[in-house]
Length: 535
Image 1 (tube, rainbow, N blue to C red):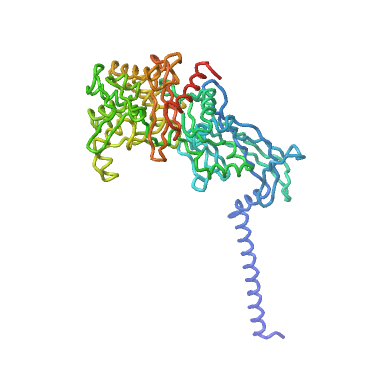
Image 2 (image 1 turned 90 degrees about the vertical axis):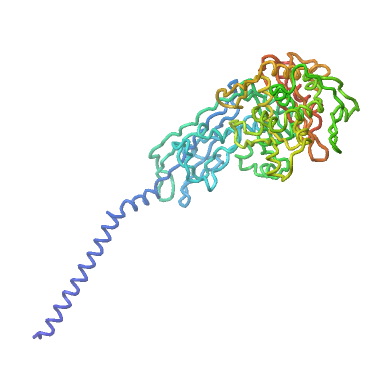
């Protein structure tokens, strides 16, 4: 017979065990609810992620096209083998030998068809860096965020026109089994190619200039009368194809360690004393300010002394001779330093600097290439602020012949000479229409300076390489002293035809010697080619 105590004990144990059983069911039900309802989507995505692979399909970039329709930078199709990997998801291999057709995909590789001859204009491609990863370009958000391993434009047109040239990548969804083997394709979004970019570049002229400058450190810019760039070249250069190929790392290392800086675009980023190619601007300033006129005559003494300082003319320094009585056209043709010392003295440095600014000097031209810098047109205020020194007349003399602290980029010089030739200041552009403004300079003053530049390339002038050239050209030679072992920069600016310019070109050979003897022959060979007189 059960006692009351034993019955109470059994009853307590019964309910305790029953409670545990109910609690267990509640825990299991709650866990099931969490797995199926609350976190069901999460675990489902994990499951699908294990069996679905997203394979990006690269979009071809737009072509970069010359004015004649030639493709300068394009793309070539390359085959890749896609294999699936449980850890990394998938791999793309270059080796496709023996691979089944379903594992082969077609991708696009950038092709720089003219290599080093066009590198500083084209730019190159480089992988997205840590700072760019995941970010969207504000100008083209539709292109999406930048992803790891993606290639984007670096330097040149590739960088400036990234939004135009870049396409939108596609994607393929592939189902795989537990071993990572492809089962089927679930869906595919085709890539959208980038847009083509039409430039003003004359590719045959560009190649000719590159060949002429090969081995000569410096730059050449050629433009038409409205600022459209026909050719732009900087040497040393590099091959952009090397930067997108994994097996060219040794070649890239040579570029990166080269003290001559092949990636540096001297045409828009190098600052140089311009020497005598600055003199036409000084002549225009003096004429416009009324300091001289077409009848002004100067008797060249060969040397001008101020206290213990002497300022000579090159003709006097080299040959001990003077030019005699000369006017403005003869002074330009003969590049007579003493004549321009006096013009600088008449004008004063502030007025001279103001006219340099009118011709776009000491400021960026805003050419559609990255990396441009502004040149320097010194003033008394600048010298006091930077050097802590007063300005002297001798400083004005130096600037008046393109020396002293005056330092300009080749693209600035070419634009200024173009302004002398046409009377309008134009923004240099490789893509797009003209942007010009009339400088409002008196026609007769411009014609007088142009006449002097025409005489510079005629018998008796300094541009002897063009004495027998037709059609008539106008030019200015420049030999700019440097502080490096007595070396001089060789300059030659020239345009033709003289009356209605169709091409304006500036040649700089860095540390090359005399402008007439070093840069002049380069310019002549290029113009012979342009006018069909040579190869």
